[in-house]
Length: 74
Image (tube, rainbow, N blue to C red; front, side):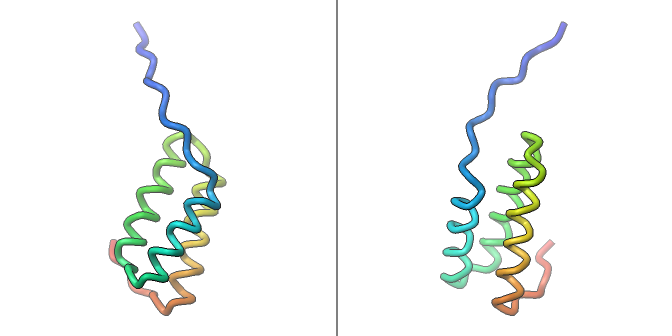
């Protein structure tokens, strides 16, 4: 007996998330942005949109480095 999983909400375009995350970083909330990068990219991975998850994480790494944020909060 197989149960069908409920359909997940449609994810917004990657660029929308990247712009939202850049705003959080530009406001100086680096830790909050990193947590958001982790959770948002995990949502894309969960629906097997791996390339888009990678785009989000790549943009996060670049913008964090641009702002001299080289620490890991993991």
